[in-house]
Image (cartoon, rainbow, N blue to C red; front, side, top):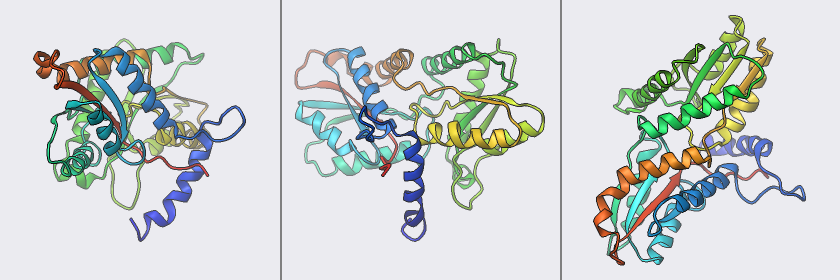
Length: 310
């Protein structure tokens, strides 16, 4: 990290963020990254959807608002029961497990621990599969051209992680399989790929960018991409796919490329998250709903550094 990554990556990320960072009416950069803004909107709408005795706080695994800050905010409200909802549909040691690690670090400082429930994943949850499939159908219906191919692009992971037992790839493929079944009426070729490769290691394949170039070479010049592993648009979708991947696809001979937006704070996503929350985090505490000192809480967390565009 200190020898290579932190010497080069921040400057590159800052340039990429400049392309996607929202600007205010006076032309200045907004105070927070798109992912943080979206996560706050998700938390606010989830707060409105869940029962009144449930408090929802957004938190980022890296950056602000931090997990420690969100936990302190909940405890200040008298919350004794904390539900952790990591917004990664598929489990990976590099994402979900690090949320658990950070939570453990924070609560280890406390003499009196809250009761904790932690959602491991929701990669095959029917509400999630239905919501993301609906978003694809809706986006497809708004296009004035017909795709030759649909890519389901998931964030990549080093192959060595999977060989060491990480279930991420299997869960991504299960999501892809369930979505294909849900979208069986759409008679367009569908394929799973993996993006955001970094470093010299071999990562999960096929790679999204390499696949796009090959599709163009094979005469499939109109492509639709959906990212079922991302719960909110971020640098990986708004810049890596919508800008860079599209440019390289066009340069290779492609004609049309469109990205289905992440579910973000759409009502269908919030409804799905509410169902998942009630099913996996709230039901075990339902007998305590009227007990003032046992408030049920959902702790809403996402994973992204908030880089500055400056």
